[in-house]
Image (cartoon, rainbow, N blue to C red; front, top):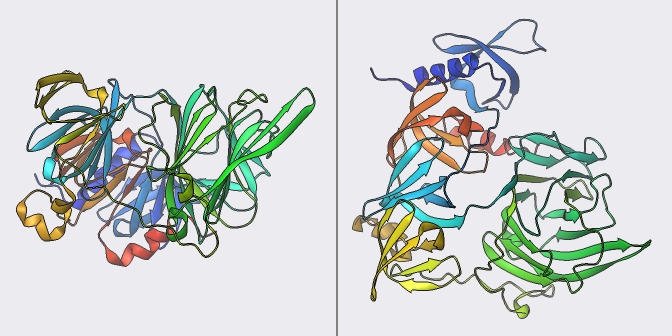
Length: 471
């Protein structure tokens, strides 16, 4: 029997209700209600909350999205493969197969997914690191100074007034910090890491990365035997800060070597070296701090171990700090070479992927077949830049999926997403179909948020407001 979009949404509501989970409903008028789903009608749901004297009816066509309790699944294998689809969706799992027509990904939340290769934009493979922290999932475990300076909403930390929010972690010697940073007009944030305490906004021992306008500056504070000091390790400009309002920040740290690398949107911005890394008593604290009322949002925070491998060299110093009248050089886009495969140590070999089986990849090269663990790969080009040009899509090498009424977009806690037509919900499982992968059954626990009416242009403004800038 065919399931309508409204029927699927009703089943989803029923599934959430039967699971006994509290959820937050975000309505198209901008209102948010947190509580429990109590009843289902033909065109509405009954919703109850502690602040309501009686349950209230909510029209289904007025629901923008549902926020769900967050769960973390177990990644398998010795690597993490990230598939980015041509519609912008991002899914992660274990690479289990590649051929001329499809790319297969083994996941904990949907079994094995077979993606149409023409709809896969990029494929990246990394070692599976030790996960130390992923979130934010709420304010539990975070320490604020002053209290109330930050709030949690829509899977993000948002500043409301000057102050810091900090968390104590057990950090290894080689650590990777990553987070999405969003701002209005210009970024203003202090990211403090390896601090010796989270009880104060400015610890005596720490590294501090200061984002201010188009510049970034790295400082270190240390104290020992009642003596201490601070030093600036360097400053640099970041071109992405001048024409964007959101970036992905990554900081790679090798404490013993004193190496600190900054990446913005996967681009290496700067390497710094601490000439005396043993100075001070660094700890495991991380802090996000603001000093004025300019709001910022921090989301998709990931803290993991790092293997210490640098994929590429940092840019020359003369590409860095600029005077006021200088303008940034345009980014140079390197044409991908489909005949070359990049390994995790940054070596490249000419060849093609023939098959993948039981964690091994078979490569066809000019000097014969080579078998390597999948984890040794970093990436390989799926097509050229020319094939991505819409003018050349008739060649059949690249394609974007069609958009259908009834499509939903489900968000993973790590910031990835998947778009599909919801066809059924039962026992905590979501069934859906998409051009990109056919039919799949998803574990509801994999998602932190599900959006509805995603192709309705009249809801664009309210979706932008859902980013959380308004008080």
